[in-house]
Image (cartoon, rainbow, N blue to C red):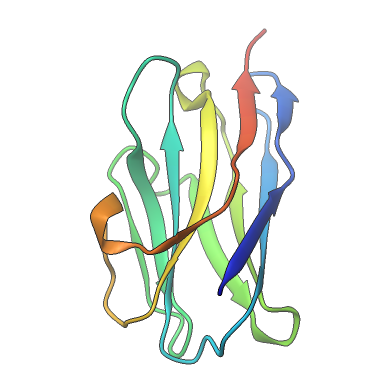
Length: 124
């Protein structure tokens, strides 16, 4: 059983930066894909970014491309989401997810394991 724990959320002002972490534990992650999703208040869960554990290939939604960066630290079994130039519309609960297969998946149904989420609020 894979367990994912997100940390790093908080309240920031527009233009600020924030880094989210997702610590993973469980079976080997050599062939896994890890992703970040977010769910704004009253809306569905949307894809943000994904990375493959083995090669580090990355994929981003258009709304965050150029502002957010997903990365991984194999030694710590942790992935990160560096968020720069934050906007009020980035406000959401951010979820880390994992799937036991390669490929840069961007749909919630493609992921098997989920973290509990961490709140990010961007407001002046």
